[in-house]
Length: 371
Ligand code: V47
Image (cartoon, rainbow, N blue to C red; front, side):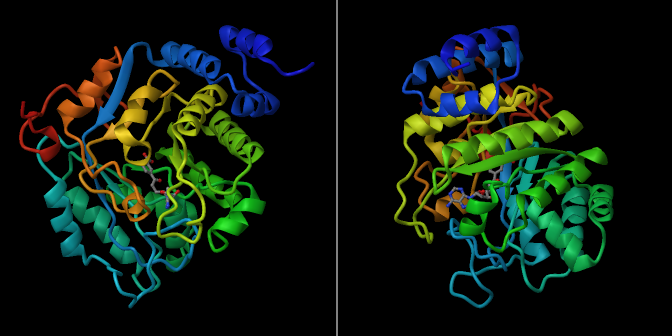
């Protein structure tokens, strides 16, 4: 049977799963409004009229990394100008800078440092948890967890259990890039394979640590590779149910080895979110990370399948190094206005999507909007 909107529309209405070919069709069709209409049906079915945001703060403890990913503008070598590594006291100062009552998450990711011992990462989690026991620690991508296993000589499960024991709450979704080996080898030859990334997540989910998942798009990947990536995530989610949200990450080319590439278009950003919503029928949430695609496109994407615009953030270094123009933080009133203006109910959530209704004072991200 030829793939077309008729059958896809029927399947979406009946809550049936879309095939790889249908995913490719949705990525290619010029009828972006129909793609959005279908994604909006699924979004509404899963999240009704609600759209989420979080009050969080990002900590990027080092930009020194043994991997040299061609899409990364953040990475430096040890000793190179602009390289930095925060001592644990500096990490704590950075946390203090981003903290105030009402914050519910620290999002911690960094490079694979050649010399820092496992105890540095363990102590980071332990100290953050000790000082901020009420703040959820979403820390270390699957790539970092694999690295911690290698430098410590401990197994994946052992590392994850150890970190969970001292306060790790969940894993962020970074490092997934694109699973297809052909392209992965070209954009990040030193990075763990897609199979290994999925294996780390499977082990994490197996011990009760939930996580997010991402895909980096808009570089040199094909449409088929994008859809294949979504299919592999869907497969693992069927097995574990451990993923919370999927976040498509728009490639930013500035200061990278792929600087000849264009920034992604609004059309692609919105389509990527919509197709993700339609293909990932077993994911509860699709997140439009405003830092990557701008607050304006994030708001529009609420009509194209997204139900989450991420958070106050305060300062994010990875995309900013690669030319993001969105700024570094938004206030709660700004996030809520964006959602309300789209006709939806803004809900402040914690990392695990519990709704938070109290704790407004103090944080720069919580400050009342000046008229
Ligand atoms: O893994 C690196 C990506 C990721 C560039 O889990 C780039 O909720 C675009 O994963 N252009 C880190 N992207 C950020 C990340 C993330 C962000 C927000 C929320 C969550 C979550 C996770 O950023 C990296 C890589 O895929 N990245 N360089 C770039 N030039």
